[in-house]
Image 1 (cartoon, one colour):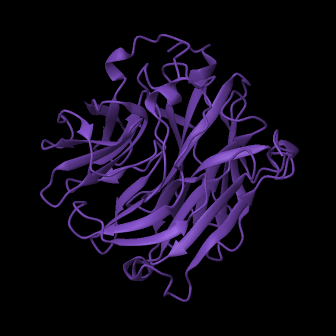
Image 2 (spheres, rainbow, N blue to C red):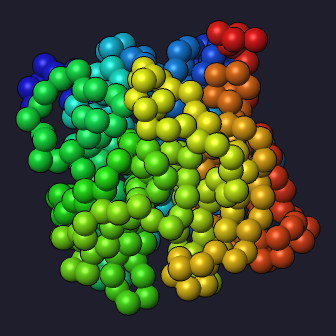
Length: 386
């Protein structure tokens, strides 16, 4: 990669950001949050924002809370010095050693056909003033969902290069057609080195946003965002080879979802459950890069006790339209923290639910410390719409 290629040059980190352009009063758009919880229970949430949706100049903000999500303070901003490049689709993950990994994607414009997964690592996220490592590019593509650690101790990262037919044509050709799949990037040395392990080809995938689960029999299950629902693929050799992709039994309105293993062994899914009409493929493809969607309602936390075959337990988190793009993390005390965005252009809220497995099993809030719709961030800049 050329050194004079801005998209492959590192962004700038701004600890404790105070510049006016990062402030609540100026931001006019924000969304796509991720969440992590430190060893001592500090909650971190990041998202990307700016003056306009999903365009060059977008930046990432990272906030933290020491009171269970009641209040948040800014900890970090990540912004590219070239305004043609955008920082987007961030992810947060606490690794087995307690380090906080801050991931983000970086590209020139909406889709430059290559993007790049970047990261900064904080070795001591519970410090009064966390220190962030230098930005580092670890893979082609985009990763906005969490890695997993498999039973062999390998880190598996769900990184994707969007296929040309996903509804956002690439503006550049980097000769990466062989990587335009739902990919798995692997580290066998706790994040020192990464390599492309394998790829799944799932029909009708749209922006991928895939997630990985290791099942009880040792196989890997990949779920993928698709234009007509949620697709799936399986690997029985540790992620090197993947079965022919197919539509799964889990429905979705072409939106991000979350799936992950809890401390209890149950699987948690956060998804639009019982939603109404969704857009057809032709309707999606007829729109521009930034799209309007249907069906992003009834955001729900679900539990499975049989490795995802059935989901008999459900707790409705937010019934409203455009309450979407969930991510989740379990705290050391067992509580479950779920973040999502609501109306990125009009209301511009990043929200959080703090719940327990008991709440989901009961189908209602039964734990005294649980709470819904906690406001993580509210952008106050005048939006383009009223």
